[in-house]
Length: 383
Picture (cartoon, helix red, strand yellow):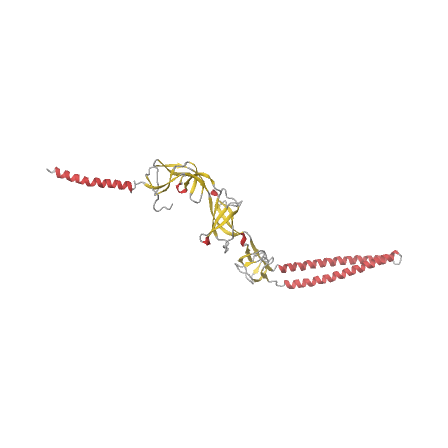
């Protein structure tokens, strides 16, 4: 009589436990640690790829002109400021001549004295030549003595020597005067080309040593970008390729340009290749020298080849692998990659063929034993 109520209670308890256990197993398989991992799948397909290089560079001026005196002195005046447009031949300022003007006037007077001495020496030589010829003629008809003829010849030699000395003196005076005049002209700071004042290193009253720059002028037409590209992907980079330039100060505005040349010397420390990129049209207003710029260079289009998204690529030690889906199961496949583009695709040279499927994104880390569920999109992952 007591066994029947006990069996009823057991059956009732099992009726509750079994559905709960089934529910627990179902939840564990669907959303717990045993649940399948959500993945998105990419299919290998063959198409042409246009590789591109992305690099960071700085705006620089190809031609910079540093203008300053050729000897030490003090700045007398400076008529330009940073940012001013200047023309070729324009006087930008002047150095203080100190006593140079007085020295030029003094040397001018010395030159005039040398000219007077030269004229006197020429007159003496002309007179000595006349006298020598006259007494030579008289000696020929025995109207004078040989001693007087000899004396006149000596006087002519003395006059010739005096004339030579006078000519040397006037040449020296002329050179000294021209040197001072040239030195005086160098006191003017003159723009050699049309350009923009980039640097003003001194103010009136500042003492400048020889060779020190007072102002620097850049040629705005010579602006270019010194760009660095990763050597790993720089194969095919050459002069003439088109480039897209984005200056940091232009809010994403794309400017057209092209590669002028690739530098023969690379940076061995950063493992980067250096290139010069020029604007097709100089932007206005001019970007400041030293501004950072993002440069994208399109390389020549490559023949069609199998492509996969670079998000599918994994690293396994020193190997490059992908998670390949074969009959619904995961398999690690080693691949050999080729060129890539900036759209996120990379060529597969070995390891995969057209039509193969690989994991592009996974909800979490997967293993060979992981169960997967293919979805169109994983929440929180931007594709």
